[in-house]
Length: 189
Image (cartoon, rainbow, N blue to C red; front, side, top):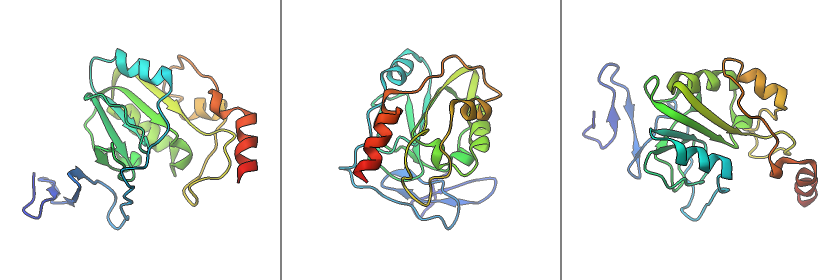
């Protein structure tokens, strides 16, 4: 329900949520909302992610794109900060969506920043319709970045462990996460 102060209010609980720049923020109380300039642009989606989005007929959830605009009206962009393409600001540990709503969940460059990856996997499973797909792109050999919110780098075995409730359709290391990329990144730091 829209609140007279311009925010949103939950009818059952009375909780109030601010609307910032026309977009609702469901961050936990007391957590500061970081707003990035419109000039901030994230990395483009990998070809496989774009193909999966294009092949969906229903809603798609894009978590933590960090300014990576998908540019499809069926895609809801949720991030923990406000970027140009963000539709909803929220915490992936408590997704503000109903059960079984999305055909596809795309998670780009975010799992290393989640305090409790297993909780996020449970939330993804909750909002994904039966038979839905998940596309995850996450850090393995990346150096520390976005400190202090860089908690986990993940091997393919760790990723499979986090996603135990899911069937693995395809798992591979992307071109920009190979050891040469990591060495170049470390050298530039």
